[in-house]
Length: 86
Image 1 (cartoon, rainbow, N blue to C red):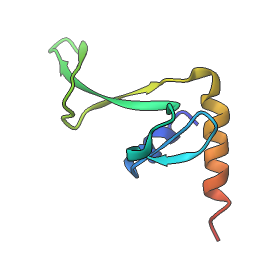
Image 2 (cartoon, one colour; image 1 turned 90 degrees about the horizontal axis):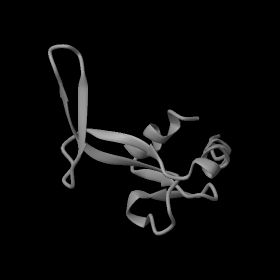
Image 3 (cartoon, rainbow, N blue to C red; image 1 turned 60 degrees about the horizontal axis):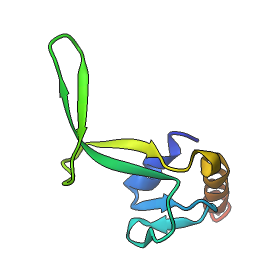
């Protein structure tokens, strides 16, 4: 379930701690994950460095904000999503 957050985010959604699927605009509840904007650089030696930024520039870092509820919330959200399919 750790990669599922990227699919929700790409579609404009997130998931609350109780497993509700919310649009990114209605994140009133604390989401169980975020994608935080970052600036990244990669040196010639392969070392990658990142720095948080306030303005998104096509690069984001996945961050689980509620480790305790992430698994159950994502399971509930996926169940709700998949049971609506024909």
